[in-house]
Image (tube, rainbow, N blue to C red; front, top):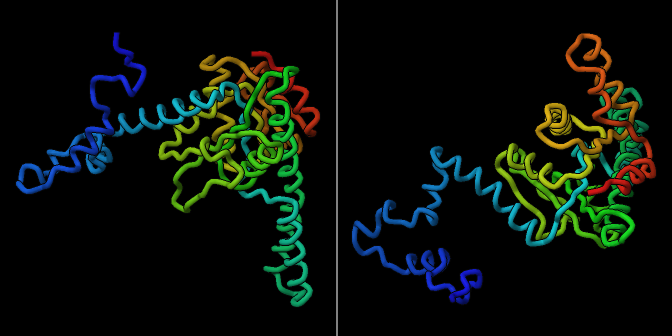
Length: 296
């Protein structure tokens, strides 16, 4: 019996083989030179047509799924947060530079505003360090028997995402990054495990991959993107589309100022029990105790 799972024993040529062979055919006739004659899966112009959007959605679902499965990434801790959050060293440098500029021109209102902003950035840098330390703990314990093996997964960009990938990297662990093409190009941070660094066109497929293996969600302070990811997860849990899982909001003071949950309850927009779908944490130790207790 032929072993069809072994590429070396298959009786049919692979798609890659046929694509290579097809490219060898010289375009000496109008028929061969026609775009219609190209293999459909090897025709970029065809694949990028609007009508092929369902195929591209399937590709973005399938590629990370296959690769993550091959690398035995089964359980993940998703870490969300602002791409604008600076590391402690970067925030300190920016704050010092702004203060020095203001000393040279004390009456300049723009410099005064800049100093205040760099002070806020310096305060937010604490969250960068917390994300970094939390990811370090997760990666450090990934192969130990006392907790469920889990890997860090982020949006793959700068800020809190970089902090989490960095923490896992510094612990000698692997971590995943789900980057996306944006109008202002966003490059993946350099701490993601290269073979687990993915790039998306569709936000929908990217967000699905955040949740497919998720066992815990951790949201640090962030903007529209973080809120989008947070509320999608809350909606899916609330409606029973995904199983309940710990959803941790770092920095209680930020979230309580940002979102008036109680107003939504008072106005009947959500139920009182919906407030149990998430919990606040303010320390790495508190978050880690919740994560390490998760059972699969």
